[in-house]
Image 1 (tube, rainbow, N blue to C red):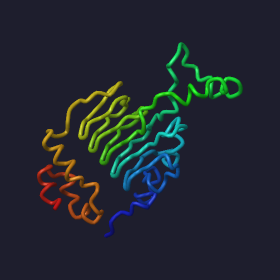
Image 2 (cartoon, rainbow, N blue to C red):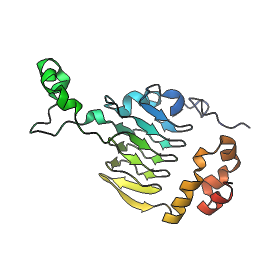
Image 3 (cartoon, rainbow, N blue to C red):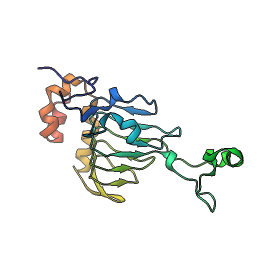
Length: 211
């Protein structure tokens, strides 16, 4: 038996609906860690085009390792924002000509929340939407259909529109321990050795095998 390769676009033999994003993504503004996958029965290979929207600016989408993205998850990037500095939110600049000449400085000066960052071991449920500049902590769970407009704490479970924290998966002390252990940064051989503890053990048990 072998360890799954992080470079295999299709990690499940003969199943085209599940793809690893790291070998798929070519856009330098999208960074994805090893073993993070996207599942979609019809458009899995079109993740960059269908699931990362309005990616016109300098902001990046950064996704960590071992994340699970369900069908229809979408990241709305900062290019979707309209300037709200004056009475109108109409994007005159994008139509070029005199409109662009007269308003380019306004468009370029629009505020930004920065990169959208998803931590490691994050599960994002079916048809969820992540808004620009949101940061999602390690081990978080995003319930299906959520609209995430603000940051999500590590090991938090959020849901709704707008998404709110429903509960934490562990106590603050256990979360701090898990963040220190950071199993997702281990060599894959060590992950494989302790995969049962990673999947079903306690934070304390995981910490015991971390050294």
